[in-house]
Length: 296
Length: 303
Image 1 (cartoon, rainbow over the protein chains, first blue to last red):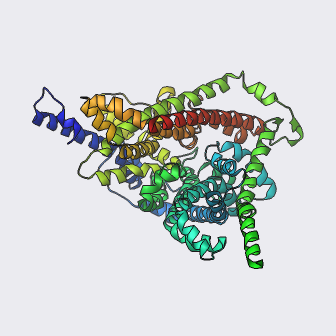
Image 2 (cartoon, chains in turn purple, cyan):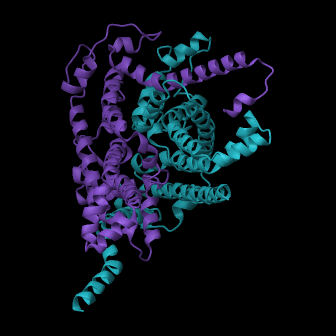
Image 3 (cartoon, rainbow over the protein chains, first blue to last red):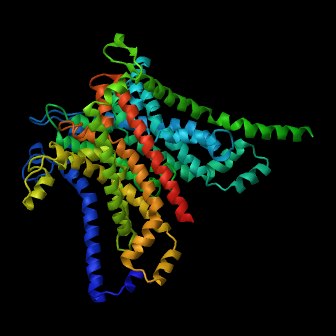
């Protein structure tokens, strides 16, 4: 029995339940509006003509247009609001390439490292693991300033390889800790059995650990990609017009001369589509990912 | 015999050397990350102007001594800390409310949970741009329009000092409330039954049950969520950069923004790094305190 129902109340049970029910309904309604309204409004904005965007009072009913999407994708020119950013598709591809490259590199280095951190005993193990973790909390500016100087000198500024290296600050600590937490979930008994059957460490890794943590690795891959996709501050200073990802690309619609609200709205929506789709697959693991495996 | 000895040697190799070999690629990248960090730490002790390389000089603590009495530094420090504390407190309290709501049974709960999660995975800078559209200062802004229905005059959300602080708080909360709620929801779902049964036998009910059973049991989860949020709130940057750029009149200029301005607007890399190091120290101090607090709470609840 629900403990709350046993409470003696001066209000008759039926009215109390009705009151509580409508309170619950109101809370749910508020939560839905709070969460969904910004999405709805940005969608509406992205479908508006420039004059409709700045109309007061705001227009809910207007004749929708796809000009903003055409503007950001093929740089279609329209009337006096001709300024367009036809390089947005490039920004999108940049995001895909840099994020994927960064996660791939993190996996190459992270899989063996996490295996060692999950299954072996050696000196300074915990200190080393903590060192990886500490990058999760460090303010990015402490790395950005020296990286900016180094990249200028080494010719890595405004290059994909440079950005992929810089993104390791985001993806490597995450990958190591997530994979470690998934590898640790594989029962040691199976590993022992494989060793008795004559498997070397390589056999244990490739035939036991990796296959059994395949779902966990997929989750790590997707979440790592998403975190890299969200990155804004490293590419803000280390990338140039050629290598901007969507996050930096989206603020390009704001300049001193004008703000292209409609195109910015369209670009913002396009920039989050991969996130919204990918998050469907990893919903249950998002908190685990954000806490680097600390909260299951 | 030989085989056995060889295998034993193999085992020893596997135990002693192999983990280090496995760590090599990861350590290489780690060194690649630590090198710029220590380089930056060194820069914080130098006068490094990007445009005037000939002025580069090791100046010891000069940068730190210059910034400490600086009123702008003191404001940034206060704002960074104050913002983080207010934001975390608000998000934990509201987040707990939402977690309690999502913990109840109702039709469409799964859909609501999935939807509520979405802001969490958005790039913070895009979240900020979405709100920037709604926070337009004139009556064209939807927020001002809705408020005008209640007779509230238009608010200059991102252009006036006090509203800009509230605006940053709203945007940050929209993006991160789901994080707090999800951790607390996980906590609620993992709570044991026994304390509730015992409390019911003792005649506890409603509020008392929440105050004296649920809340203490949730404590480790609350501290954990607060710890992660605190770390991020102290470092908040993307949202401020995309909305107020530290303005109006430096009102939203936290340590992170100011370090960025020193380095990339005024090209004073040394001073920028000094600010960055102060922020780093603050973050580590906060994480150290909160982690210790969390460990104690976790021990108390398992007893």
